[in-house]
Structure formats: C-alpha cells, structure tokens
Image (cartoon, rainbow, N blue to C red; front, side, top):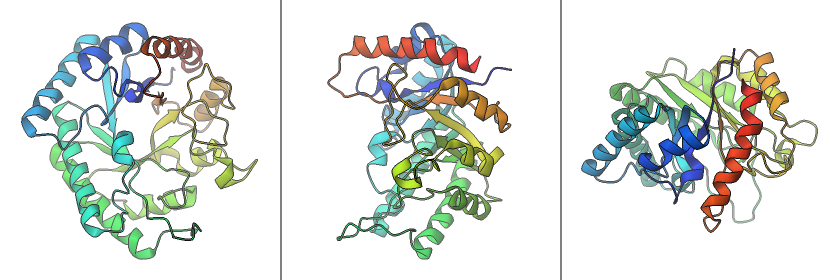
Length: 299
C-alpha cells in the first residue's frame, strides 16, 4: 500500500498565494493530490469577510483541481513570535486567540486538522539555555491546549497537531517530553497528535552525533503521530532543502523506517523554503525534480 505523500505549501509564500495559483501547480506540475496549507498564505486575523471569501476559494479551487487539503499549519510568520510561551501573558492570550481564529478559517475551507509549534520561552541574557521550561509555563500550556481542543471541536475539527522542534526553549523537544504531553492532553475534546519533522528529530547539535534520528520518535510516539514533514538536511541545521540538494536523508530508507514502525498510513509532506529573491522558474524546476525522486519512494 502506498504511503500518502503531499507537499506543504510553504514554497508558495509570497509567490503562488491564492488557490487559483497553487492548486494547478500541485496537481499538474507536481502531480500530487494532497497538500498541507500554510497560514502564511491566509492570515486568520484578517477581517471575517475577507477570510470567508478566501476560505471558500480554497475549498472550491482545491476540489476543482482534485487536491485534498489534509491540514493547515501555522507557517513561518506566526512561528516567529513566541506564541503561547511568550513572557507577557497578554501575548500568550493573543496567540491562543490566533489559533482559535485559525480553526475557524480551516473549518470554513473544509480542513479538519490544524497544527504547528506551540511557542518558545524568552532567551536568558547570558545566552545559557535551561534543560526545560518551568513547571508553571508547562502547566499553563497544557491548560491552553485543553481549551483550544474545545474550540476546535466547536468548529468541527477532528485533530490538532503539535510539531516538536529542536530547541530547548520550545516544547516538546524530546520524545520523553512529547510522551508526557500526550498523557497530559489525553481526553482533550479533540485529540492532540504530533507532526514530526526529519530536520527536527535528527538535529545532532542538540541530540548528539549518532544519537539523533527519527527511529526514536517513531518508536516512542507510534500512533500519536498524525503527520510527518520530510526535507533534505545534513542533520546540522534545520535546512528545509528540496531533494536536488545533497544531504543525509535517503527517501527510500525514510519510507522503509516509517513503514517498519507501523506508520505506513501517516501522510508525509515535503516542507521546503526558498529565499524570496530566488526566481520562480528555478523553484518549479527543482520541485519537479524532487518529485521525481520522492514519489517513487512513497509508491
């Protein structure tokens, strides 16, 4: 059985920004029928009348192109803020409100899953990083996650995702932390699952050389993984390269590892980013060549 494979629309940011533009590229140029929307393309804080119209466009254009929008992720713009771990409680409240708005937009667009990283504590003045966030910060985050699940249920969503990142200031960044979070959000109104990323779980500067790897994440989280991001990377930084670049990720081995852990049905999305000044034609070219490499591995 083929493993579901698609693309995160991160490559479209500041370029193919409407579904009338990106849906034909996904279906015709890349030959895919599965995508993950990025909220870099539609800001949940825009006025309702604009959002309602754009959500309708997403639903209509995706259907016309034969593309399923599996989920929506917060994107880079919102990720740059510290979100629900910002030192100012008012900013945490705003981040929670932002996500509730995101759930509304997703539901209007016919998308039933939303996810992304949850936040980051502020850096210390001396630059030293603690091994964990405070118990109070974590407890508050769990309360917010339960509250968000209630909001998601009210909008008709079916799943929410946390994306672990390889940073001590964000949460969770280890398998054990993710397991604890899964236990503490068990019974939420909508299930909280994880989206693991090949550039995050293999980050050697944090996890150690020869110890970093996706096998631990797959084995440790199992069916609590709801989606996977794949990228080409060198395990030294979170590169988000396409597969025309030379790196350490072997697509065939990546799929085999996923299937060996019983996760063959979990959808995988290529998530790549490009400099805004790079020309559009070259991006389409490397994406097509990446698909020629990736799609046979997932078939």
